[in-house]
Amino acid sequence: MKRIGLFLGCNIPLRRPDIEYSMRYVLNELGVEIVELDGATCCPAFGTMPSIDLVGWCAGSAWNMAIAEEKGVDMITGCGSCYGSLNEARYHMEKHPEIKEKVNEILGKVGKKYKGVVKIWNFYNYIYEEIGIEEVKKKVKYPLNDIICGTHVGCHNLWPSKAYSTNDDNVFKPTRIKEICEAVGGKAPWYSTILDCCGMGALGSLAKEKSWALWRRKVNKMIEEINPELFVTGCSSCLLRYDNDQALMKKEGLIDFEIPAVHIAQLLALVMGAEPEKAVGLAEVPIDGIITKIKGGK
Amino acid sequence: MEFGRETNVIKLDEEFFKEFETELQEAGMSINDLRSCIQCGKCAGTCPMALAGLEFFIKKIVHAATLGLKEIFLDDSSVWGCQSCNRCVEICPMEIKPYELIQAIRRVSFREYAMPSNTIDGLQNYYKLGHAVVVKGYENRRKKVGLPELPPTTLGNKEMRKKFQEMLKNTVLAEVAPFPLD
Ligand code: SF4
Ligand code: SF4
Image (tube, rainbow over all chains, first blue to last red; front, side, top):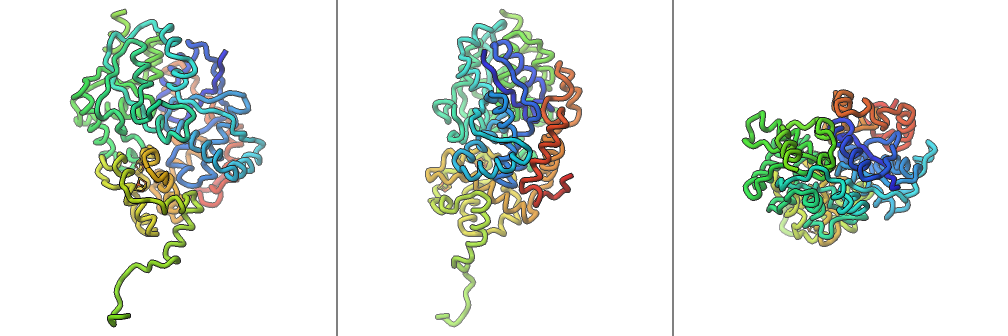
């Protein structure tokens, strides 16, 4: 039986635990044993330790990775920022043994050690590579019935590719999320702004209007070109933008569309038969129409 | 001077660059790498900040850093708005890793107290709870979707939270945190 350490981060367990529920549901369905990473923390987020100190950042990430190493498992995350921060820290320590040494001095003070053997997966790469699309297909109870998915992979899932041990073949032309959507019965056409940023990073907290406009620019184009019925993201931060912020923009009269959004883990949970109240229970843009369409036309 | 008057020019001697360069180097940016920038502008072309209205954002930053213009960064907080997306790192033909320069500039600026307030909030949450981002009402949200109120992270594990804080006290946070570590 496959085992994997579930790295939660902050936004998934605290803001959108419906993604956490979905990740657990899907991994269970696929026969993967989930190992809890007791005492794990924030990755740490790019605006915190990584912006203060290189060794401090690596120590913070190594704290989390050491927990997985103690349990003898690799880690999986549904958050692009966690995926980026952990992998980049890992990469820095691999390239610069003197950083790793300093980190282990710091961890050693509390009886911990980072070996550097753990691999950090993001959710969809784990599904794609470790499980395989054929296995996923076998578990589909409610196929997507040709629902048009507007896919958004998320910056950190792709770049910097050097820091990642697994990735799309062409990191400027990603297909893995598209392939997963199509394997479960959806359509996921290409559109011209597909690689654009959702704007959810630091810009979101420093200049909200600018960052919202960035998202609208991308999405207006997407709607014009492919008219999606559902947004599907590979990253939890992007989902906050596509769902929670979309709902706010609608309220403020900044947009005139209403398109439900899910994280790829939520999409898989739904097609595998999870209760919508749990798998997408915290969605803010109304999602009932999609649920009906998925469940209705088996 | 040859023409009998002083001209205002930047003093392009080694000293002028040195201080900032040393600081950046100590903050994790390789100055050798930085110096190989050919100002091609690819980083700026791929940077989402351009679409948000900050044209040539990262190229200007790389340029200003190679000129040693530290003051610019202390007066202007835009390095803190970078999305950390790493498009620039992926695309740079000279492998300069412009995003790592942004991080290094942030690290230098932080030590001069030039940072936005949400950085401090995030850092403080990170130290106190182990989570930089804690949005109120999480217990109810978790319950609603059938999960235990507390996650198995340091939020739900006091013993590990203490240990984590002890660990952080051995990092540079002990010297530079703008809040008490206790
Ligand atoms: S892409 Fe690299 S070489 Fe080109 S301007 Fe940017 S930092 Fe300099
Ligand atoms: S990491 Fe920052 S500077 Fe580089 S492309 Fe992304 S937003 Fe621009």
